[in-house]
Image (cartoon, rainbow, N blue to C red; front, side, top):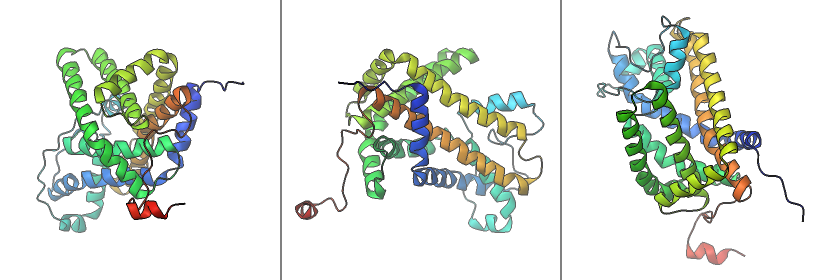
Length: 304
């Protein structure tokens, strides 16, 4: 019997891009979640006549190399802002509000509430990309609900690992490599948890390490390709110097950057799912049965 060739890293990347592009509703939903997360902070910042600069704002006066590295390493933010602003602020200062919202969306990555939202959508997002076919809203959110509490347990392990790295590895390069390695392993743990419907997150971590050990060349090359595309996007964005032409003209390119950044973030998951399925399963394989709406005994009886 003819044996199909193993999925390559570049093949997994192309497949991952296709899976994300075939599910535009997921990208739109993630963009909306990011906008809603940044909304209160943008309102509060707009309410001040002289908003204080934050780590999320890209300043033109810094050299390009410094800003490029800062964009790549944007893991922490300072969400300590007055959340008591009203929508009237946005109505009185729409341009300034939109610019602030865009800046926060471009850098939102680590506030606790935002990370919890990502943990919630992770299950449904990976499930959609792994199946590579529409799961509709009920299927997407059913998967989100199933894996949310499992990923909360995994999140505790992730937080402990990141804490150890940030506390004991102070050298920037070593710390960056260690953090990237942690995210690399946890991504595959999430993929294996969803595709194989794993309940034990420690088991998912062991399975992720086993898969990486057996397919380390393809896994590392794929991660490097994903990250290189992300780094190139950030480099183009920083080189363009958004904001130098004024807030009106910076809104559209900055929002395009937000969408592109989220698109690449989703490609990490989709391409890793494609590589795993291509090496150990088959395209579209997910162990968990897809929920059908309405999922009830009466609906079950009506099925042929």
